[in-house]
Each structure stands twice: as C-alpha cells, then as structure tokens.
Image (tube, rainbow, N blue to C red; front, side, top):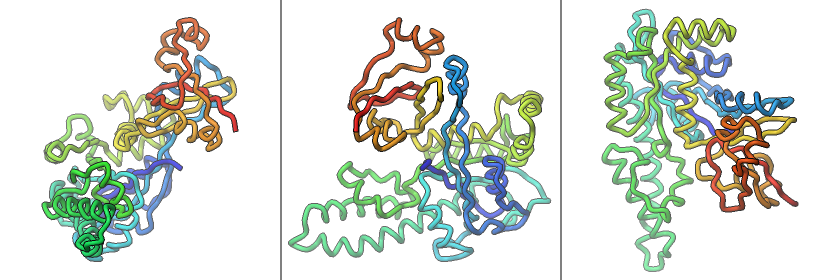
Length: 366
C-alpha cells in the first residue's frame, strides 16, 4: 500500500484543483466552500528519469514506475476542533494520513471567493495549524488524565511511567503552541505515542497556490509563507493549480512546448510529488531484467530484507542475499556486464541498508 499525503487547507484555496491535476481524478472543484465533503483518493506516479534511463539500457518488455497516494480532504475552518464546519469528520481523515500537504492561497482574484473575506496566507496558515494543534491537545489531555493517575500509584510499572513522561512532554509543546513533532521524545517514549495518531506529529509541506505570474519569482504572499516555513523548519513548493490543470490536459509534446514558453523545466506537480516523497523520507530502488524494469518505494534506512518484503513477504522471510549495484554505475558504463567487469556488482547480506538508486536482485529460499 503506498504511503500517502493528505491535502489540507481552508475551503476554496485550490486543494481539489491541485488534486485533480495531480491524479487526473474527478474531485469536485467549485467556487464555494465545502464542495469537497468525502475525501478523494488518487494514486500518482512518481516522476523519475532514472527509470527510463535504466530501461534504455536493459530494454525490458515492461516498465513500472513507483507511486504514492494523495488524499484530498475537505476544507477546515476556524473552530473545526470543536466541531465547526464538518470538523471532527475531517480531522479523522487527516489522522489517517502519513504526511500533510497544506495548501495556502497566494493569489488575488475577485472572482474566487475567500472563506475569510480576503487573502492573508499567514492568517490562513494559523487557522489550520491552530485547529490541528487543538485537536491534538484534546487527544493528549484525555489520555494523560487516565495515565497520570496510574503513574502516581505506588504499583505503577516502568511502562506506565514512560508513557506518562511522553505525554507530559507532548502537553508542554502543545500548550506552548508548537506541533507535537517538536517534542523531545526519547526512543523509549516514542512508541507510547503512536496510537494517539497525532496530526501535528506528521511532517508538513506548504503548497503555495499562486497565479501564473507568481510561479518563478513568487510574490509578497509567497515571501511571507516561505519566511514562516523557514521559522518552522518546513518546506514550501510554489505551484499554480489553475495552470497545472491546463498542463495535465496537454499531450506530451504540447506540454513540453508550453513549459518551455513559461521558462519552466518541468510541471510544478512534479516538484510537489518529489517534495512530498522527501517529506515522507522515502527513497527508490530498482529491479531490472529483460522482463521488467520496476521502481520500488521504501523508507530511508530500510535494510535489504525489508526492501525485499516490499515485493513479496516471501522474499523477506526467506532472504539469503541481494546482488546490488548503483544505477549511476550502470549509466556510467552502459551495461550490467560492464558494471560486473569493473567489480562494482556486489553481494549484500541482511544488514545492508539500501541506498537511493540501487539496482537489486534478491535471492531467497522459503
């Protein structure tokens, strides 16, 4: 199952427009708040030029890119943590995601209404972030009420005390208006917080939705968003949802010409996908043969057996070793045989940490 990013923001900031362009899906996009109620889900291809370069050298019968999932979640409003708008329903959808893409409106257009009456991206960001934080604070306070009593008992065991310590750290940062991901949890404490599904513990990416004129150089709105993101240690991607919708409808040759005319090397959606991929701390490895060249997604730091398990659980269970070489070496020397002759193909065992761009062939026995 692909890891996923939830697309959030105030109503009518362009979430569904961007989602439609990303996935070529049919999420409703309209000029009024709450036109999205149930979340829309789409699986998108992760652009990776290495895949086509490997294919050109291996010449397989089929080519399979890796993917990730985006979920268009209906707009939040001030008071969502208390049930305003469609509050708790939407917050529940966000909890189920792995990361958050926070869309912020950074363009003026009198024809497109703004739920708050005017364009103010920092104000919009504060509304969303505050509602997510308040929802988490409520969750942690409820859990802490139960655990705190147990921790004070003379018979409290180490596990209860460890959880109480973790919850105390979370309450400190949340009450200070900071996201849960900033809490200084130890490796021992962290597992006790996972079943809370805290929203502000998730990594977050800001998507500045601009008009065509703001794509390359930005504008005063994007400057404010980018300054705030630096303060938070977050990333920002500038894209024009309206323009990306047009690009998504073009044939490849027309698209390339359009991008060239705009002074762009690739669609903004590619940058968004890559940024979301990095946000989730993902990397890509490849399997390559005459039948198929395929890209696979794993978490950075995954060992060889875990990477094999992405293909099939039997590969992980019966893992013996992995023949491995770097895709860059294939590009440099032109063939797998040449890579072997250079002594760059090696056998790796269970402790090998897979690197981005590795080409792997697994050997297993079940």
